[in-house]
Length: 283
Ligand code: GLN
Image (tube, rainbow, N blue to C red):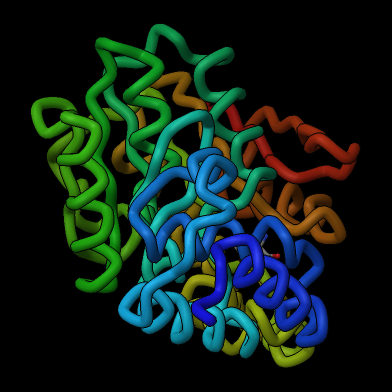
């Protein structure tokens, strides 16, 4: 007797629950929908349909990968961020909901900005979300890793932003020499300490790119590199928005004061009330 879609869904859910998924039913539904090429709600109108062996063959490897901890975003190749759809794969960090705070702040604080740059852009989610929300904004996305830069370019094209958003390969603000000045500079650099990285949940540590997470011994190394480069490309009165670890936002603020001297700074809270984004206003 071939299994019905509902029976496959039930068995898949049990399998994922047993292997540690916190959202086994949702994951199973998303995997089945993805494998069958339909949206999740359409599964419900075909529960009684028997699945063909070829369909099961598409579902099995996805279930097995999920059971081993592979993040759903990589399995599906997509993640929603700031209401927009982004392509993601193992070359980029999966966009996190807490980073939406940075985009919201950018739009609220600098709706007047003409030029913006996102340093270490990964999937491109920050800069693309800003440009999608501010129709006059031109944005440069800087990325050192060629694989991640390729994903960012794919996302720029997917959102039809090629005219206003450019991906530039290089380290932090280096590729921006002579292109500015920028009124808005944003970054979500690697800020987990190396020892924290070693203890991260395996679904993060074993699958997401280390270079996007590991910020060195004290988690502040990347900021030490990028902060001194910013005044050289910034417009007068430019706004800098940096995502950081809530436990170290005070240290990041002192570092910014020390490296940039006499700047106005403000710490912003994320959705769960933790200090997550440092705002720096240049003179
Ligand atoms: N918020 C991420 C995490 O905890 C870290 C992102 C980063 O290092 N930029 O997984």
